Structure formats: structure tokens, C-alpha cells
Length: 382
Ligand SMILES: Cc1ncc(COP(=O)(O)O)c(C=O)c1O
Image 1 (tube, rainbow, N blue to C red):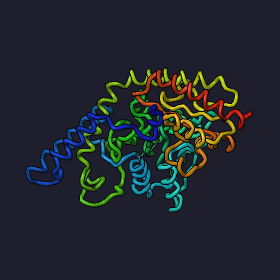
Image 2: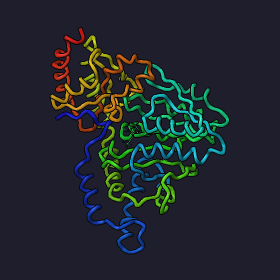
Image 3: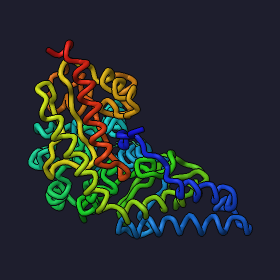
Image 4: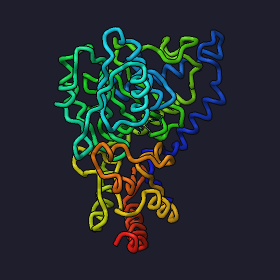
């Protein structure tokens, strides 16, 4: 099997799963309990928080556990809207955000917030000047992702942060779900970023784990009310095993990060070089430093994306149409639409997304499978 769908999800590492299992079995007390079963659970939760904070260069008080990227995105967006609605109702975002951001914005629009959705260039990137031009006295939030999940474009977070230094009251949120472990921490944790969202299952932790970074002093309203866990910010009995497993996975990701990025780049280059030889292939992801190491989006003109996905699946190679969330609904790829790629071409788009385990040998096997598949499609495309 060749698994090239790591942006959809990653396989939980065996030692991470072992941590999860051991904690579930042995440290099963409620962290809020006063008796002696609660204490080790609380200690482990806080130890996991400290580890994650250390790994991302934050303070423990700036890390809040969530159930994943969608929750984090919804929390920061709606939590800001609730906290700052007295000061303004204007929010700036981009046309290439994940559905978790896009649909949270749509919900707020229905509640009377005004959303400015910025266009992107042909690489799928926002222009910092457009952010500047869109800022108003009543702007409360700018939400721009770090790395796009469909084509891998890296957004100019640092430059946007520079602009926002003149707007200290505006919350700046970065969806960093696709950026973690990709050598991009300097971008995500530049000093003007107030909030960043992360999802454990994208870096070999179990599904249903995640966290947000929330800069000290920045206020969010909680969305989940109850017993006041997570310092009153996110109620619900904590997923201690998930937090411990996620901390372990993050440590491993960080230890192997430099090597893994280099390997991903080599694998991506090998596949891109191969694909470029074909007349009917479009590459949407660039190979320059505007793109993360792990995503390569391409189309075979005239062949639907799902047909390509299934052709590879028959050869035990797993890729996806452009995003796992939209792939089953056969929705048009929103990033490509924002890049003004014609719908007829966007329908043919598929995404390879690499992980630290992928190898050049797998790239060679993929390229060979591609030749066979392309030859099979020749009648349709010529
Ligand atoms: C950029 C981005 N944001 C948010 C999410 C949602 O994360 P989760 O699946 O953990 O809810 C994803 C998942 O694909 C993503 O790629």
C-alpha cells in the first residue's frame, strides 16, 4: 500500500497508540476529581500541556485542548465574535480557507457580521496589501490559514502580521492544521499571531484530539459551557489519554521535522518532474518556497478527479480529490475556484499529500502506476 493522503488524516503511530491505551487503562480518573484517582490524571494533562507549549514555543497557559481543527477554528472565530461584538462586526478572511472557517464565517454572516473574503493570486495566495485595504475601524478578526489543504500554498502570515501591528486590537487567527511539522513554525508563531489552531490526527495522534494556541491576554468567549474545564474556556471532562498521546506525537514530529521535510520535498519533486512530461496534466501546486513540502495537486484534463482516485486505489495507492471533506460530496474544489481555475479543469483535480513515512521508492511506484493509468485514459483525453 502507498498512502499519499496524509492531509486527510495520518496513521496513529504505534507508540502513540500505546500511550493512549496505557493512559486509558491506568490513568482513568477524572482530572477534576479531588480524590487520589483524579490527581495523576490532572498531572498528566498538565504535563501534556507543558510539553506541547514547549514544542511550539508557547506558555502552558496559552494551550487549550480541543477535539480537532474544526472545533478550534469554530471556537476562535465565534469566540472572537462573541467577545468583541461590542467593538465591531467586521471580519476578514480569504477565499481559500478550510470549510471549518468558511462555514463558521457563513454562520456569523447570518447573524449580522460582515465578512470580507479576500481573493487570491494564481498561486492561491492572499496579497498582504489586500488585507491592509480591507481593514476598518470595526474589524475584529483577520483569519488566514498558514498552509492551504488543497494545493499546499503557504500564506504570507508574517507580512500580514506586520500590517496588523498597526491594528493591535484586531485578533489575528491562523489555521495551522496543515502547517505543523512542515518546518513553518517561524511563520505560524510570528509575534503578531494571536490564535493558531491544530489537529492531532494530522500528525499521527488519534482522531478527536487537537489544541489551540491563544496568546496570553487575548480574550475568547467559550463556546462549550459547563463545568469550567480548560480554565473556564472549554468545558467537558478532558480527554487525558488523547492529550498525552498528542503530546507524544508532537514531540516525535518535531524531532523528525527537518529530515521529514527534506524527504517530502524530494518525493514531491520526483512526482512533479514526472507529471510535467504529460501534455494533459496541470500542476496547481508550485515547487517554490510559496508551497509546503507535502502537498501536490494536479489534474489530468478531461478525467474526473474521482475516476483518477479510484484508478490509483485499484493499484493500492491512496490519494484524494482535493479535500477529504468535500470529496464525498463531489463539491467543486473551493481553492481552485478561488484561483479562477475553470470548473471543467478543477473537476479533474486530485491531491497527493505526503507524510514523513513516504519514500522515493514510493514516488517511483506512483510514477509507474501513473504511466499505466494515463495510457488507459488516453482514449478519453485525446
Ligand atoms: C486547513 C484545515 N483546517 C481545518 C481542518 C479540520 O480539522 P479536523 O479534521 O481536525 O476537524 C482541516 C482538515 O482537513 C484542514 O486541512
